Image (cartoon, rainbow over all chains, first blue to last red; front, side, top):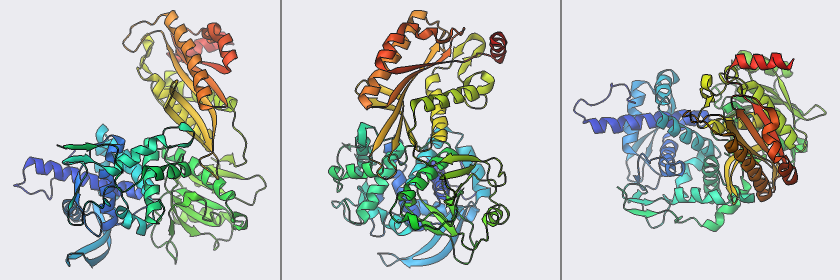
Length: 228
Length: 362
C-alpha cells in the first residue's frame, strides 16, 4: 500500500519512501480509530501518545512494532518524522487541523499546537484499500481496540498517560535518553504487563486480546490517580 | 535486531497490583472483533443495568435516554457543546434525560441534555431531521414504563417500526434458551448454501460434500454473534484453555454491580460431522462415532472444570445423508449420566436437497 506520490521527495530512496508511506498509513489509521472511539479532534500530544501506545502494545496482539524506540521527553513521546508526515497530510488535504496555537517545550522551543481529524472524503478510499490487505486489517483491528480502551481516559489523562506507562515511566531511563522497547532490546514492560493480565481473570478464565488492552489502560488510569 | 529479551519484567509496575484491575473490569473488551452493532447493543444493555443498581440512580430524571451509535457529535449542535464522559461504563453517570453519542465499545460517550425537548417525538425529529442521524443504530431506554426494557432500532429512528424490545429484568438464562438461539442461527444462516450466502460459507465444494477445513471456527463465530445479540448481558468466550482441554464456547455472565462475580451459564462443545475432509479424503463412520463420543466427554469435563450450569454437544452434520440423531445412539447413556445435552443440526449441501427433504417430511 502506498499513498499518493504527491509530497514525496524525488531523491528519496525507496526504503525511505516505504517507511514514509507506512507512517502515513499508520497516522490515517490512528485518526480513523480515534474518531470511531469518539476521541477527535485529537490534539498533537494525545496523538503522539496514541502512536506510542500503538507501538509499545503491538506485541500483545502479536504484531510488529512500527517504531521500537522513542526519545523520553518531559511532555511525553513525540515522533518528529510522524509529525512531519502529519503536517504533509494536512497539506495534501487528507487530514484536517483545528484549534491552532503555539506552545513552548522543555528546550525553550516553540511548537505548533493543533487538533487533528481525518478528511473522510480523501482518507476513506485510502483506508478502504489498505484494509483489503490482511496485515493492515489486523493492525487496524488492534489500533481500533486500543482507541476504544483509551476512550476511558479523559483528555487530560490521555495527555499524561505515558507518565505512568510501564515502559516510558521506567525510572532507570532519564529524560533526554532513548526508551528502547523493540529496536535493540525486547524489554517491553508495557506489553509484559498487558500479557500478565491473561491469567488474572476471576474464575480462571483467560483474558482475551481485547481485555488485555482495556485492563492495561484501566490500570494505567488507576496509577495516574495514585492507586496501584 | 533486538539483542536483549525479557518477557517477564514489569519495570515500575508490580504484578501483585494487576489482579484487582482485571477483577474490577472483567469482560470489558472481551467482545473485540464482533460487529459494532452487536457490541453497541450489549454495551448499552449492560450500562443501563449497571446504572440501575448504582447508588443514587433512583433520583435520575424520569425521561428517556437515547443512545446513537455515532461516536462523534457534530459541532455547534446547541449553545453548550456536547460533554464527553470517559469511563461511562462504570455506571456513575446519569443516563436519562440525555441524548448520547456512543462508540461501539460503550466505554465513553458525549451527551446533549434532552430537557429542552417538549416530548419524545421532538427528540426523534431532532435525531432524524436536524442531526440527520436517523439511519444509525439507536437504543432508547425509557425509565417511565413499568417493566424496564430498552428499545433497539437497528436501522435507526428513520425506521421506527423496525424495533426490538429487550427486557432489563434480571432473569437467569438457561441452556435451553441458548440452544434455541443456536437453532435460530442454524435455520437462518447455516441450513443451506443459500442461507450461508448471507453469513459465512462452510462448503469447500458442496457438490461433493467437502466442508471447509475450519468449519467449526466459522460456526463458532456466528454463534457468538447470535447468542450475544439475543442475550446482551452475556460474555461469550471461545477457545478457553482449561485443564481438560480447550473449550469451544463458554457463555458467562458478569454481575452488573461486581464484574468479578461470574455465572457460567453454559459450555458448548461444537463438532462438525463430515463424510469428507476439505481435501476430499473420506472419513469413516467409526471415526465419526469416536468424534461424537469424544465431544460428550469433553463437554462433561469442561462443565465440571468450569462449574458451568449446563453443557451441550452441538453437532453440525455436513455428511452426505441425514440420519438424524442416530449419531448419538452410542453415547446417549454416557451423555445422560454426565448431564450433557445432545443437539444435532443437518446442513444440506444444496437447496435442492433441502427442498426434497422438506417435501418428504410433509
